[in-house]
Image (cartoon, protein in one colour):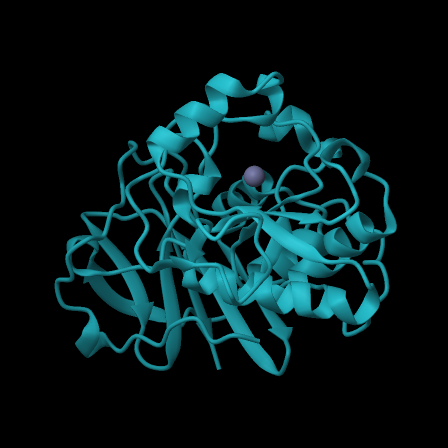
Length: 301
Ligand SMILES: [Zn+2]
């Protein structure tokens, strides 16, 4: 599984380009103690087990997040920013690259965040081992002007976000299609089910399942995948959470620990107090704002 970032405290000096906290921090108070998830990662290729109704947490462990750092002095990946009808993109993504030739594309103009491309490339390579079909990306990063055109031309606005609110603007989303299967025929195909069931292994989630339409505000899109990394993608699938629900579960639960692919992850959700969040004293970790006023710190060993 891809290692996201390893940031030492020494590296946490002021880095430009960190776009966070565009919205008012929510009033919700949360524990900064990580909590243990009772569920185990799955190693099989089979369909995910019936999800638990709700993540179950046991007694919190002593916190490993002990070092206060000013949010003005940190740089994050932004992999966990929530972008939807209520939350506009926080800024332009860095590290956007051409998707071609790493993966098949509908046009060589398709670009995407390099980390998302690595994930999608892995997913498509795995799909190719299962199917003879050609899986390809038709859309990755979209700037505001492109999104405005897509939105204006869309016959069904239930499948498109207005400019500034599209996940494609983050560079972390990809529309994956299969040659020979039309957009409106994709739902229910074996290939679409396989993508939905296996995307989490590559840090991707099916962002708009039909069952979550009331929450996401977007109709079923079996082609639209979003990179959020691990253990977040695994946790969403195991607990049948769409991304909105996942962020809310972190806010209310404070975090969790999980063992996955030989790594022990500790996830902490923090709302800055006095401009500070708390990071581990040592080890590997990744920081991302959630675009709603909080920060998600993912530590692993
Ligand atoms: Zn899409």
